[in-house]
Image (tube, rainbow, N blue to C red; front, side, top):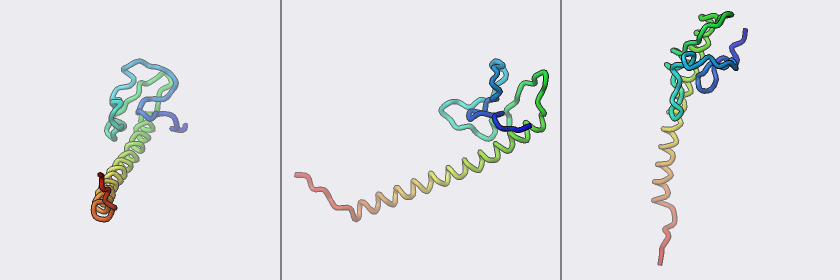
Length: 102
């Protein structure tokens, strides 16, 4: 069985069936990014056919680990972006032509 499609971008089970609000706890707030603990703690309702809990947990941990790497990379990128913007502002204040208004 493949794991593709089990967890959507918002951390919700993606089976195409609605199982009510109890099936989807630990959901992220829309204005905040999904965090690793939300993925690791996500639980799924069991159906008559069931899911292999070890397979689901393994996949959720894999997704959470990847999210941790991406969050760290995003933080480094934001820091670098701030540093570059600051350096550009410094350069502009020293070397950019001055605009004289009459």
